[in-house]
Length: 238
Length: 223
Image (tube, rainbow over all chains, first blue to last red; front, side):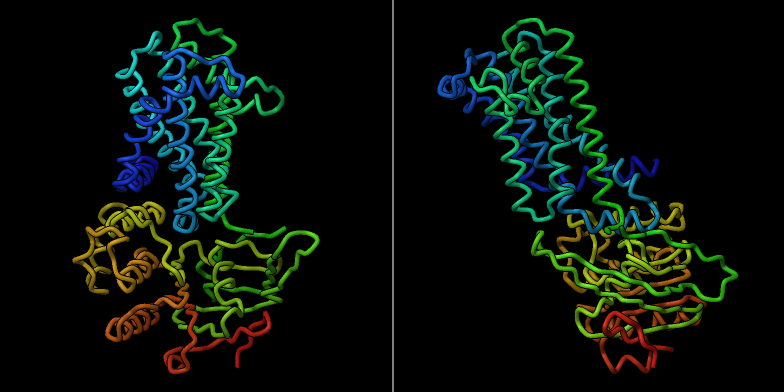
């Protein structure tokens, strides 16, 4: 087994051994898709948005569940393991290889989280374009790997950092397309294009190629940010 | 801007670590109230093979900061550091992953040290026996007592038999028997050629050390 696979595998096990994390991997998508989605249309109406219909609200709730979980997991990957990762890097593995293993672990966890959210969505309401929905949910997850890792690299304190991840998530979610009538900078959150894709997938509408390209670019940018954040956390401090 | 550049010593060089004029400061607070505290103002030290050298000083004198600079975990503001590529470092507070087992820690650090599976198994078995915590090898770190965590912390620094061993108060949490065993282990490795630098603050330990540096006001002094 290569060093990369061995180290990345250890980092995945580190998270999956927490029983509460495992329970939340199931509970949060179920809560978002089965309960939160049912009132999302009312939220959007109150905020001046246009989102309505079971297909759209259920789909977007699945994306948010994946984003929320992956943002939190990526934050705690950095926050809780900073000292040990730095020691491992200084022992000879190097900050770049530690960061690569962390990215691999975060992506693997993102795939698991996205799969749970997708299955919950499928069981709840069926999906008009299932492959589109699966890709968009995974995009939500990977974009928030970048958000969570960045916050973790900049803020060491667990409470303050996790609150900031929640704040970014809340602003992004409730100012996104169809959720609010307000424009400006808040309408350009990191998951804006993924939201468009997911709503289209949920309602059976086609998605323009431009949205796919924009989502691909956002995911690549988020993974690059996450790599930089993991690298920053593992390298020698100044 | 700090520097983390380390010059790697060749084996023919007499000392295994040499630090010259090491400076380090930390900023506190937010501008315009930001203050800077200079912790190290030109610390010098060297350790040769087969030496057990102590580094003592009051709390907050910068001992752990100097250790982290020697290891490469912390960038310095000035000065020079020369040390071998193969070193072991035991931090004051165990730097471990709570959810991983003792064996998984050995496996991860063996990868970092470039050891193959046979060398890893041999080293881990020897250290588990020597430090007497073999029965915990399948336990996660979160399930270990403070003393057993510290044993693992120390074992990870020793498993690749480094040329230079940097120990930052490595016996915190050890019982008396383990404490005595720790010194026997250190002296045996010193006699086999390893250079060891250990942060210590017990006067009674000074007789075990070949030399002692005192760190005060950011500078080292060797009486």
